[in-house]
Amino acid sequence: MARKYFGTDGIRGATNVSPMTAQMAMKVGMAAGAYFQRGDHRHRVVIGKDTRLSGYMLESALVAGFTSVGMDVVMVGPMPTPAVAMLTQSMRADIGVMISASHNPYADNGIKLFGPDGYKLSDEAEAAIEALIDGDIPLVTSDQIGRARRIEDAQGRYIHFAKSTFPENLRLDGMRIVLDCANGAAYKVAPSALWELGADVVAIGVTPNGTNINDGVGSTAPQALAEAVVANGADIGIALDGDADRLIVVDETGTIVDGDQLMATIAASWARQGRLAGGGLVATVMSNLGLERHLAAQGLGLVRTAVGDRHVLEKMRSSGYNVGGEQSGHIILSDYATTGDGLVAALQILAEVKRSGAPASEVLHRFEPLPQLLKNVRFAGGKPLDHDAVKAVIAEAEAELAGKGRLVIRPSGTEPVIRVMAEGDDLGQVERVVDRICDAVRQAAA
Image (cartoon, rainbow, N blue to C red; front, top):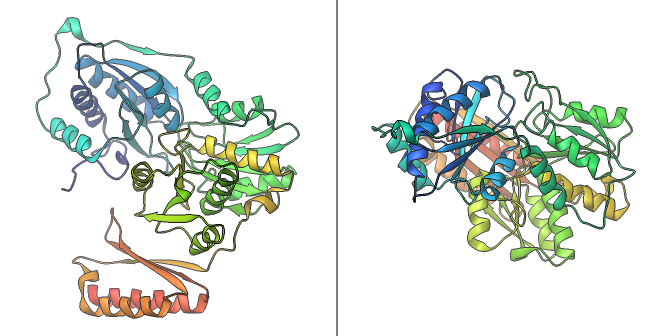
């Protein structure tokens, strides 16, 4: 069943435009608060946010909604998404809320919800909350209105947690690290954690002003980090996104290392230590075929899911894996966290570099990626992938790439676009295959 407000990762959109309005935020607070009122105890919600200008507006509206249905509110201020998930669980809260649009520009914002176990809500829970949003939500009597307070030790709690995931027998002394926090949620906690572990930290993207989050910095714009690593003679660069659930690394030469290489590094390290669960890792259909071949050569498996960290986590939980993620840098390490955590993943990478004693460029480039090409075809309407001519071209392409490459074709979940991706040993063949399919889709949609 199609959902009205919730997308693949909460509710998201341009602020002050439906559905991302203060009125909607208050309704979400009322509905989620009513849904999680279970038992006779005083119910509690933890609310965090990134550094967007609109965060104050949405935070106030959410507080009004939650307190109006009798739920106490704990505000933790700017904090990474995984920190909110962790605090929700550790503080025995009934629900957690993160106000963020992740890697989007500042004008967008979003609302992500976590259950008492620190995991993102199920489809069923989101559907139930949507039904409440559109209904009449009963308010509590005046003497039962919830209380709201802001706590000051949330940052310290998360820093302590993050440091606890780093091996006790290691330190980062002598390592110069450029850290890019995207002018986002981790601008205080991430530099502090690395410095306390002994690193010489050169921090960029740590001067948020409400409108500069993800603006030319962070994991989606790693060029600034690459330049800073080279200019400062650093050993490695770490880039987080606006809500710090995503990680991209730059080695000492300024070369970007994506999520596939990082997952390969962590999986190899954990397998060597005997702590890799499931005999491999979980990634999406967009991860490079080179990763799959690299893992197979080590006797490790790769299970693929649909795009989205939500699907990755579901597969990890159902099949017993403890490493998973996306090429874009969402890396989930379920031994430590219930969602992607850029800082925790970075600490695992830093531990492996430190442990090896070799340069990051030697440690982190685990395999040669196969040529990969992605093109988007916009269409006016209908279902071009259902046309017989398109199906025939796709079948021919799959036969041509058999054993030599891979083809992924999927409609966008947010716009009328067909995404055509192919990869293989021969770049020329990959380009021809993608172009033929794109042409067929255009003709079918004409």
